[in-house]
Structure formats: structure tokens, C-alpha cells
Image (cartoon, rainbow over all chains, first blue to last red; front, side, top):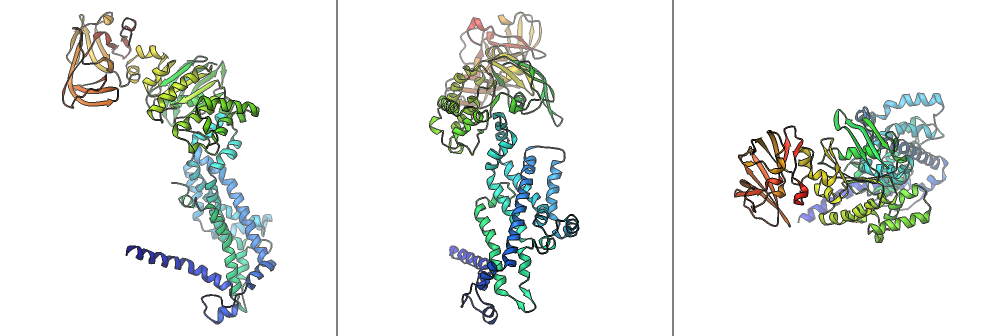
Length: 267
Length: 364
């Protein structure tokens, strides 16, 4: 009997989780008049027109590529900065290290909106406005501290004696770091990349404010489905579906290390 | 190569880990660092290796000051207590890694890795990853990596302590042969007096951040320079009882009076600490002059071949180490004897005043 109760609970949970997803995919395959005209649990007349619009209209696929570009750029910047920083925090003790480490995390506590105006003003003046790099740098402010925290946890799990053995064997720091150390924490790097990706991919406010046309993010293009003539539901749903694809791919790669990443690398 | 430590000390965060010490390790010598945990063995080794900088003092290698030299440029190999290997590399690559960094020719690397693997009996494991090996095999890999390069200084920090008893005996014996063939300065840290005695060479006895005696291992064991050495360099620690020497009589504070044994007759009257090795206490009393110690049994520890009997008499606690299995129930009366010529005497300051004459008896 207990088994059946738990099954019902699980089933209900699964339905609640999957229903919105299913509904979005359902909508994306329907023409607008069917969406607005009737209630259908599944698309009665399949149409791929919404998806065709996404891949043929330059404003759609262009902005999708924009989003991918600044997200990848941000991942590269965040990891390049965070790897050596996390190594320093995990291996050395220096004046104020604990305070600095905590202060890094407090950066995450500030709402992005607080930094909106300074970023906008600064980027306007130095010519970064409406570039991919502008968004990537702005996101790095939030992602670098998070990346340092997660990576530090993973690095702390590697005994310091491995570093020392390598130095005794004659490895230079850079060679040791690249050929021995990074392979040891590649799971942690994957998880960090995932979290960095998620923040940058879903962040709307900074991305929208710091760009105009050249680096316009996908999410901004999605708002253009709302016009005076009404909302293009089918297209909006299709855009929503393609937004989820990169996230699903990244999760697939880090699925084994995700739990440890959620505890910031501490086990 | 000779390694000379001059006035080395180490203070970390206001806490003294090493008090200023001088130590000279001869070329090709085998040196044991003996001391309990936290005695400063690892701290001292890390300074020798160049992994840590001493707070004061110099490390001099063959007359060259290497205190500030990076560990990468030193000729050092080190094996840790934990099994440290590069987890991502096969055993073969692990052993080869120091040679590859030193840009040895590939054929030479291949030959030496094979040779070293054979010496340490891991030649059939060369293609495995360290995580797939047992603890003993992992430590063999770490040893092979340390030994494959002919370094001038070889540091072994309790390399066998995490292995089970049988494996430890086996590997210790092999290590002794492997190291005998080297002309490097070898330093081996251990907490176990028996291990030091098995390995031989010289022993530096460490106690709370100080080197309190350095010299030939067996000589140090037989002639501990003071009370602390006597306690550290005997397992179980030497029994100690305060005593008074007067008019040819040795009055132990626990109430026993005996005539002064021959080897202690030269001592001036006064207060002493008398030391008795646990294995000199026993049931058999062949001679009339033997000193009897009585008490009630606290605990008996049996290992397959010997028994440790802990007993107390008033405020004095004793431990006897005897061959074979001896059953004594806790609370039972115990009567042990010791021959007076086995007694050690330490003066009031703790320094050795008289030790048993070894040559006459053939044992210490």
C-alpha cells in the first residue's frame, strides 16, 4: 500500500514538472488560430512554421547567436579568472583571505539592477556599449565569485601533497596546473561552467540594457512577438523551446557532478 | 652530498614548531627521525626538502646555501605517509614523470621505469591507474617514482605507517636493501623505535620540536642521553622511578632498597631517576640480588608473540614486556623481578648518569 501512495505522489510531481514543458512544446507546434480558437491537449494540425521562422529570420537566429556568443565569452572569462583565484584560496593563506573570500560571495547578493546605471554609463563612454563583450564582462561580475566558490571546494578536495610531489619532481607551476591539476578537477570545472552558463543565459536586465541592435540577446527578440496586433503565441513558444536546448545539453555533460556543485564543491 | 642544518627553527603563527637546531647528515648516510606525532619530524623534513622556509637558520648542501632555493631546482625526492600519486596517470607514467621532466631520452626512461618497477614488484601493474591498486601497491608506486631519479636527498615521511602489519614488514625489508645501494642522504621519519632499530643507520630523536639526541641508532638506544630519549626510544616507554643513592644503597622511592649495582658505583650520592626497560622485567628470578617489584595488574595486552603487562604499586605504574602469552587477570597480584645490572640511572636534570654495560652481557 505504501508503495502505491508514493507512486501517486511521484506521478503528481512529475505531471506538475512536465506539464508546463509539454504545454509549451504543444503550443509551439500549433498555428495561432488553433491556440486562440480551441482548447486542445495535443496539436490537431501540426505546423513547423514557427520553427521555420526562427531559423530563417535573421533577427531571430542572429540574436540567438548573440546570446550564445556573450554566454560563451562570459564562461571563458569567468573560468580563466576563477581558476587561479580559486587555487590561491585553496592553497595559500594570506592576510585577509577569509574576509576576501566571503566578500566575493556578497557580490552575488547585490541585485544586478544596482549595477545597471554604472555599467551603462561606463560602457557608453568607453565604446563597449552594444557589444558582446559588454554583456560578458557585466555578467562576470556575478559569475566570477560563484565560480571561485565552487572551484575552491573542488580544489580543496585534492591533497596539497600532489602539488608538492609535482614540484619535487621538477614540474613548473604552469605545467603542473595544466597537465596534472586541471584534469583532476575537470568535473568541478564542468559544474562551474554550468552555473556560469545558467546565470548568463537567463539574465535579461543587464543584457537588454547594455545592448541595442548589434548584440541584441535572444530574450529581447522574444519580447517583439508582442505587438499592436496581438501576441504571436506559437512563435513565442517555439522560441522558448529552443532557449532550453543549450541548458539541457550542458546539464547532460555535468549530470554526475551536479550534486557536488550545488553544495559549492564541499562534500 | 652532505646536508647541514644550521640553527634551523620554525615558528608558525606565534607557535614554535621547531626550536633552533643544528644537524649534519653525512654523505650516503641513512638517518632516522624518531619521535612521536607532533614532535616536528614532518616540519623538519619539509624544511630539508625546501617545501617550507625555516624561520631562522640555513640549509647547506655540500657547502652551498640552498635555504632560498626553489624545490624544483633541488635534487630531492619525497614519499609521504599518504599514498600520493598522480591520479590521472598510469603507474608507468607516474614513475616516468620525474624523468620526463628532466628530459631523459625515451629509451632510457623505459629502461629505468621497468627496472624500478621490477625492484618494487609492480611490473605487472604498469598500465593501471593508481586508484585501481591496493594501498601497498600505491605506496610502491610512490616509492618507485621517488627512487627512479638518482636524487642527492631522499626523504621518506612515515612511508609505511598506513600499511597493514605484514605488508609493512615486507616493504621495510625491501626498502632496506634498495636504500643500502644508494649514496644519497636518506632521511626516514618514524614513530616506532622498533622500526628505527630495524633500519639501523643514525637516529635523530625528536621531542616537542627539538632534536634531543643524534647518533648511531643502536648506540642511541643503548645510551639514551636523557630521560626524554629513554621514553621516546623504547616501546613501551621505559619505566621510571625516582630513587636516592646513599652509602652504597640505592633506595627506590617505591620502597625497595638494594645495594648499588656494579655499573652505578661511580655515582655521587644524591637523587636519581632509575629506568628499567619493560623487557627486563620478568617472572624468573635466578639470582639472589634481583630486585622484586610487586603490584596489582591493571591490564594485559597480548600480541601473538609477546605480552604487555601493566601493573601499579601505589603511585607507580609499571609495564613489563614478556615473550609468550601470559594471562594475568586485572586486579591480580603481580610480582616481577629485574636484575640490577639492567638499571639505567638519570640524574636530577634528566641526563644519563649510568647505563648498563652492554658488552659484558651481550644485550642492552
